[in-house]
Length: 147
Image 1: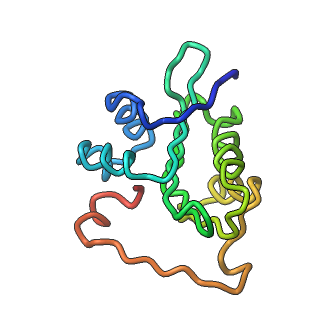
Image 2: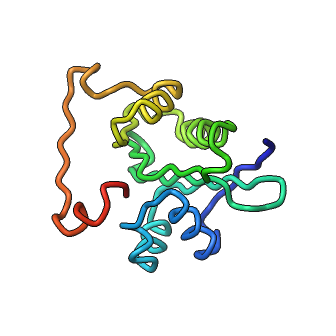
């Protein structure tokens, strides 16, 4: 599959929402205005488009741009999975910030997700002798674990 990667800050809200819906991330799609504000406030937003120009992937990173980066969202349209889109988004983002020493993300603990992130060079926090602490708001956590 051929695709291009560009800055995603100007992506149309309808296509962004369709991508989140395709992923089943209803915590985001339930508050579309909030999602679009979050995207606008992110350190970096990258989108992938297929040959027809359709949005097929997106990565949203928050951080300080110098020492730490948190990949908040990475989504690939179901029909584009296993095509290199997700990996290309991660590598492009990492290439934009070569001096950041700590890249962080939280993901579902399922074999497919674990396999993808380890193939991109990530390790479990436990492999570094670390533990991650997270606190979700009760209402948001019960709506949907994804997003």
